[in-house]
Length: 395
Image (cartoon, rainbow, N blue to C red):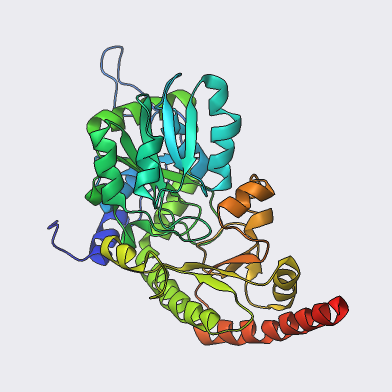
């Protein structure tokens, strides 16, 4: 297939594999843990599903092609993918990591890897001088989330890659928020791309999965060794479900991103909202950079209300979004990062990361944008009433 076709066409062609024996338009679900071998000396491609399975292979080949990498890998969760990537490091190695990194990544760095002699430094990865100062002789990886979760800070991927190469480091990029539809870090020089595929790639809140795509065969071989050795592989049924979700990724995330832009503009005009975090807004500090390395502001935004009481009033009176952890689904999901995605950080760490007590994160789904805006407008009435009561009581 020509590489000049549009992404949406490529996505369908890579996820629809006609079975040569039956003509089935969907990849079969190979529910087999083991595979017959012809004889002592001639083993087939598959022997045991932990090491490889035709259904999982189809998913891994699809994501590798869509991200423009050498090889893809499917894991039992996003954290399984991230943890495996960090296990490319050895005792005595060091990593540079965003100070507002996802709570699960924060936990593996601070409570697990340190026990094995793998050190880290948290920095503001949007500040290249700060990143460079944090690099040590034993630094092996610069890890990036862009846009970051939940404050949507934008890191210059190409600049980080240049720094990493100058210091003989690898660059890992969490591309969960953008997906390969909007951003392809390997094209910008990154060595490894990671996804919590539970989110947009699945898209239906029914699969927990992680994906990784390596740029080079050398890194791919190391990741495969770890994937097979550790065994945190994605199950066959979930691999098939993820392939199904991947087929509609392009249309889903584009629709959600279109609505997110309108909702971000709505929040920006509301007096109850202190700040809106969304790289599709012109006044976002990383808007210009984001537009250079991604093709959309995405479908996730955060907004800050006056305090936790205001956030509670808002959440208690919206009707359409689900109030839950996670993001990237067909339904809009509203979450409270201080007690959900970033609960692992203490108050001081959250404040340093810009996660205030009134911060809410919204993953925009496929509901009509006007219906969501109407729902939010009605909830703001209760936020305003709550704040007026507070002011009167303070007097």
